Image (cartoon, rainbow, N blue to C red; front, side):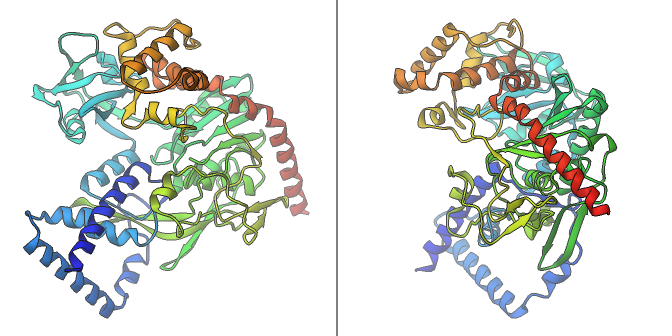
Length: 553
């Protein structure tokens, strides 16, 4: 009788853990999608056969008991996809995870950054699939679909309450084919149907523009796609990198992704052949990734902004820039993920993302944060202050500056945003009021945006628009209509945070996401602080040059 509740508890607990990992994975993947690193398969076959046989017998015996005696029918896929396989992985580390066939296909699609469809980000809101972002210039935007539209039918098939993955599959299709999308739009009485001609959709996580003459902003929101380094080159070439006198490099909230893309991006700023990162694990030899320099990217100072949401591949980038004295780091200590995952395809289209190695920055730092003395939930989500610097993992940059391992990349200059605007980058709300207003299932700004413009074409005078007192009062009234309990003091204490989020939401509807984010970025106090810190980056660049010249003597 004791075995049954234990097995049941494991399945339930690990099913919940899997849900946590889905939305917050910060892995750095090695190798081509679907590939297996050399030596891994052979090593797996040399495991102790006796211990393996005993373990497999126990699993099959437990499943046989469950299948025969459980109160209702047992679905094998659910038992193994949500129970046994995630259960094995959860005993290892927080980043090894299991992807079912749909999740794995979606991850591969994200990595390719190209597909045929309507070009629209969708999500689930109050049980229905909703348009979150028609991409600029996409077939969806050209046809007239908007942020906040509730997708009611696709080609006449009712989609209200349908799984969002099924809706996404219905919207995708061969280029030049037409799909009819029926939506319910807040403020409009009758449904509206749009004929959307599918096209080839390319997505990008890179944005680059001039903050002021000579000073360029480069933002990368993740390294999950295989076109990141290409898009960086294209964006800087379009601006004219020969005109750059300083760069603000924004990695805040970047959760990581493909190691090769991170290496290609940071390598352009380093000297040719310099070490970017190395990794080694039990079943594979050490690998060293080296820089391929871009001549135009060698001579201007860089200030790199990081925060606690900067993880994995973005820590590889910031660690290499710091260790080689190539950039001045500003912000918070990064997440602290020094583990490398590889993709291992399974039958039926599923896959494992398995930790196979630790990675080390050029100076030899291991920046993995301790996960053994806390729950995985706390590891991912609990607010944390900067950990004390390790006194056992102390290394030096090329010019001799001390740097520390053991828990993320510590910036050269600390900066904690006084009132972070959560949509701009991953940031834990500062207080309970912010958490309630901007919760994942309680997004008040999004719903207010649908009511603010109603059925009218969204319009604001310019991207420099800022919510006035009347707009803030309307939002306050809206919160009260939603039965949200708060005091006037709470509202007033968070007034700037509310204004920033309202501005982002309404500008995104009147223009597009890039325009909205750029507008707020121009007023971001951390960006202004980064610009002020460019002389420090210039001094670091001169120090780096002196070190390199000395090494040639």
